[in-house]
Amino acid sequence: MDNSKSTMPALHILGYLGLLPFLALSLLTFFPLPGFDALAMFQRYSAIILGFMAGVLWPVWSQRLSVWPLAVFAVSLPVLSFLAGFLPQGATLTVELLLFVALRLGERWFELDQQYHPAYLQLRKQLTAVVVGCHAALLLFLLL
Image (cartoon, rainbow, N blue to C red; front, side, top):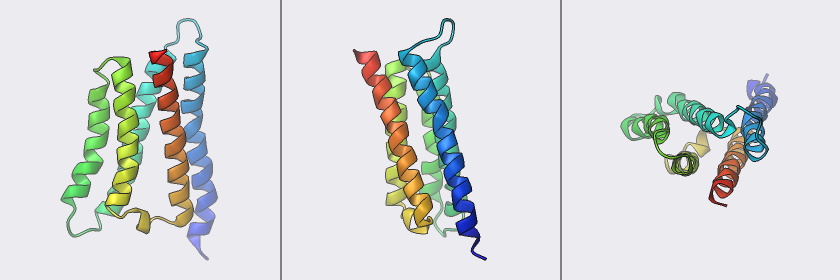
């Protein structure tokens, strides 16, 4: 039995469920609830998810002969996201947006896309697009 076919629906469900906080917190930033800082929560969630997505790279890079470039890349993303939390909100959103784009580009640069199941690769692209879109919408909201 091909286990990858049975796990793909679960990965898609979990991936899309992971988008719900991005979408809900974005909406709550536009339409705030009294006493709830949706933008701060969005930034925290963004840092957590970036760390998770970079952490998914670990099993891939651990199988390579030359692990240092990819290892440094994977570890640096969540560290930079954490450090961005000390910046003003607009700068934090910008850094996080760029880090999600860098993660996606890094997956291509390090040829990880070729190791992913095609359905998982498509999922990663879709999730990244929505997450980057949420970051961009909040940045525009802050600037206007």
